[in-house]
Length: 361
Image 1 (cartoon, rainbow, N blue to C red):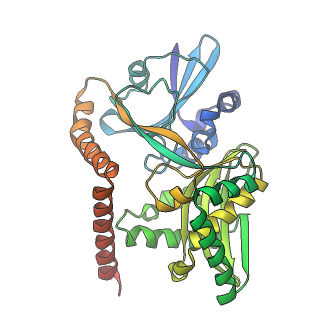
Image 2: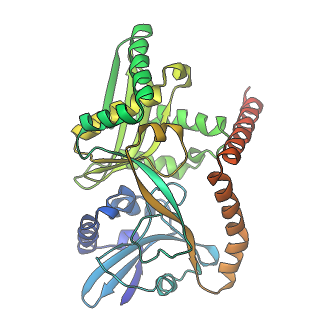
Image 3: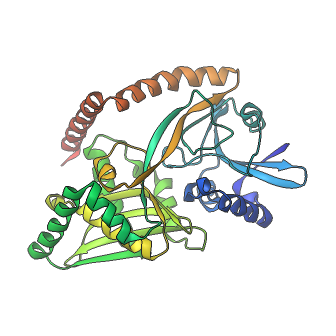
């Protein structure tokens, strides 16, 4: 086994073709976050992005996209943003994960959404459910499942859809638009949501905004950005921006105008999005790991992702352990306990309201 480390921009046409072949050979790899286009887009904006290319004799048998941070700390590409991480590799590939991160010149590789079946996966890593909307049997079949599983939610959403139209006006859904204006409206809603709930505003980092704009302009057979918006009487009320392969749409940035909150515009929008996505050939909407009420109501299946790290004995790995592992374990304890999770959520929302009131003119 030979491993070479390259920048995304230095991957050749044959490398990209082989990456797509390997990605298409295993359904576990069917996530846009594991597509070469995503790594190249992030690499154009972040110099720390690298790709480990695995060679077995004359054959390329794997690609590991990663970020190299100071002290040899390794993370997935766009860490903190992605819902699928890992090595895209040939079937039955065997490799020592410690050998792999050594070849990447890393002391430790940390992840929180590692996909199943990875050579990187070890017994001590924590598994988490990742809810999906499974459209492989068609949208009508999905809706029948939701009526049985979440009948009250479905009936309530249908009623609120009719009421929204009576109170405000006709509903229009614009799927796969490439217009920047509604994108910026959506990002503004998302920023407000982050602040309101006490979370870090991802769009305060200009490179993430530029990444989203670049992905919006990308539309190929294998990969593309997808923006869809829900309008009422011509005014935007909810939307979502995600990325897709040919058959999987990754749920990424959903948000809505809170002035319409009583109509549950997020649920109305997600059902409309699922219908249009299914018509466009999408078979799976991956809503991503996380305890969210709307995901529980809309899901009809789930994947599994892992959280953990692989480390070699080194000063960098030791520092990383002290800074990250105890905090991650504490966070895991909170998230696994509904009472603690709800308390933490209330604290964050209180902080968000205070921060918003302080920042208001």
